[in-house]
Image (cartoon, rainbow, N blue to C red; front, side, top):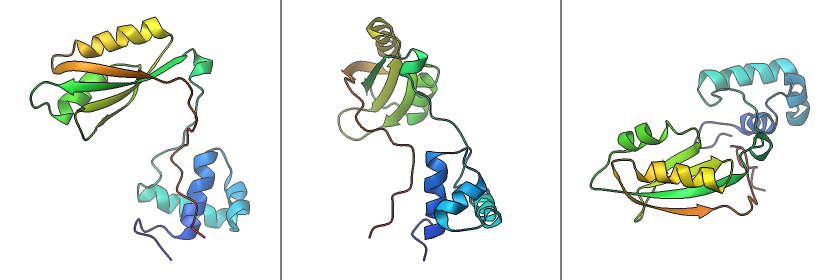
Length: 157
């Protein structure tokens, strides 16, 4: 049985294992999903061909790399600013780890990581100086309580 994405339960199970540990071997994945290593490889190859799997990566600990401060910065834009203009501006900031257009009064929500509060302040000042930005509002993260990799949800049951 497949869901709306065209993935069956085995594909989803394989994706869950790989999302949690991209270094898992096909045999290790197979142990979790009750398939042989060659069967897992064939499915992973198909998922890559379909673009479901775009690559394999590691998850880093930002604090261990010196990025101690995190904030969400809301950007309120002047006039009508296109998403392409927003993306072009914020993608040049190495401190910006995510940016999304959103509904409501805010036009752009930016997730920022910085070394400390002074560094964060400089980033927010630079963002506020972008020509299309009317004003900003920042929320500093005190504790990151839940962080999940992009993992397909477990089957309901």
